[in-house]
Amino acid sequence: CLTQINIKEEILNELILLYFCAESPSPTETDSEDEVIFNRILKVNKDSSQYLQEGDIVPQRSRSAISCRHCNWPQSSDGIVRVPYVLDPTYEESHIKGIHDAMAEFETLTCINFVKRKTERDYLIIKSADGCWSNYGKVGGGQTVSVMKGGCMWKGIIQHELDHALGFLHEHSRSDRDKHVKIMWEYISPADRPDFKKFENSNNLGLPYDYSSVMHYGPYTFTNTTGRATIVPIPDGSVHIGQRQGLSNLDVAKINKLYNCSRCSTILDAASGSLRSANHPRNYSDNTNCVWLIRTQSGKISLHFQAFELQRTRGCQGDYVKVYDGSSKSSAVLMDKTCGSKIPNDVVASSNLMLVEFVTDGAGTAAGFQATFTSGRSENKENGKEKQSN
Image (tube, rainbow, N blue to C red; front, side):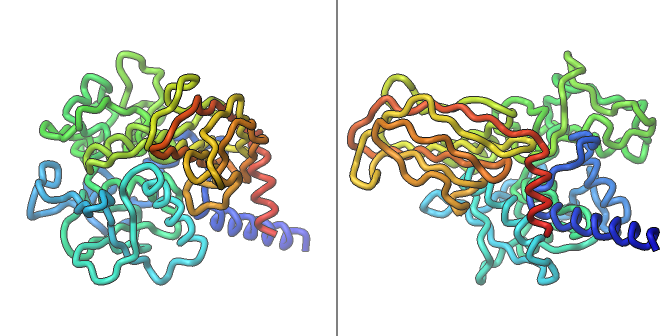
C-alpha cells in the first residue's frame, strides 16, 4: 500500500513539474545552463522525423536562407513589425501562457509584435509537432514553428525558435566565430560536423560576438566524448557559453538593428544590480521611453529607489516611472505612474521578473532616478510553485 502511495506521489510530482515548465520554467540546480536550451532541444529532436540542419532548422531547397534578401518580416508605417501567428488548438492553457510569456519579451524589448493571424498570407503556425524546430526567417505562406508540448515548453527554447523565424542563425555559425571560439573537431562525429558550418556571408550587423546569446550552442553540444567540449571560448576558455533565461541584451540589439527598431531597452540578469535614468544625477532628456527588464535566475525581485526627482504633473501624465509584476506592460502593475520628488516605497515582485518603465514628455526635465534591485533566495520560487500547485 505504501509503495502505491509513493508511486502516485511521484506521478503527481512529475505532472506538476510538466505543468510549470510551461510557465516561466527554471531547470533544477543540477542542470547546467547550456543543457537547458540547446542540449534540451537536441534531446527532444532526437526522435523527430523532420529533416533538420544544425539540430533545429528546417532547410529550404529554394534558396540559401543565410543570404536571403526577402526573409525579414515587413515593418508597418508605425515602426512595429507584426508577425501573425496561429496556435495549435491542442495546446492547453499552461502551454499558451508559456508561449505568450516568451513572445511578450520580444514585444517589450524590440519592435517585434506577435499578433493573432486574421487573413495575412505569411504567418507562423506554432504547433506541437515532433520536436523544437523552425525555419530561418520568413519563407512565405504558413510556416511551422514546432514547440512540442512534451519538451519544448521553456521560455528560452520558445524564444530560440522564434528568433530563427525572425531570421537569425546560431551564434557559432557567424563568419567571425574563429576569433571567439575554437571548434574541437576531434570530439565531433563526422555526421554532426556540418552542424558546425561557418557561414562566410553571415550578416553580423556590426555587433559583437555574443557568448550568452539564446542562439548559442552549449560547450558540449554534439560531443562524442563525455566531458569533452566541442566549443571552447578563446582566448579565455572559462567564459560561460549557452544560457537558460532567454534573450540576451545583444540578441535584443541584433533584432532591433536588423529590423530598424528604435527602442531603449535593457535586460538586467544578475542577482542584484542598479539602474538609473540617462545622465543621472544630471537632467534626463525630453521625449524618452525606456524599459529595464529585471530577470534574475530565481527568487522574488525587490526594487529600492535611492534617488527620485521627476517633473511633477497632474496624474503624472508627463514624466513618470511605472513598475510591472512580470516581463510586459500587460503584467499586473506594482507601482503605477509616479512622479515628483518623494522617494517611492520599495517594490517587490511576485517572481523573478520585473519591468521598470520610464517615460518623459517634451515639457521640462529633472534629475531623474536611481534604484537598486536584489533577488531573494531560490526557495522563494519553490514556495511560489507549491502554492500555485495546490
